[in-house]
Image (cartoon, rainbow, N blue to C red):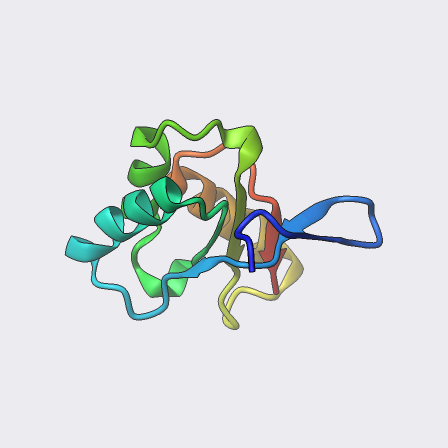
Length: 108
C-alpha cells in the first residue's frame, strides 16, 4: 500500500491511511524516528500529551523538509482534561509542545 493513500472524512478533509504512532517512543529516539518516517513518505504523525514526546515530534516536524500543509498531525487530550474549561488549555499546551499553530485531528 502506498503511503500516499488517503481517506476522505465527512468534512471533506483527507487523512493518510498510514501513519506513525509514537506511543511509548522514548524522547531520545522519537525525533529521529519521525525524521526517518517523514523522509520515507509518511505524512501522518500521531502523538498525545500523555506520551511525553510532543516536543521532540515538533522539533522533527520543524527540521524536516516537509511543508506543514502536507502533514496530518494527530494528538490527544488526556482523560483528566475533558471538562469544558480544561479542553482549550490542554490543546494550547500540545500546540506549544509541538511548535504548531494547529493540529489536524484532536482526539478526545
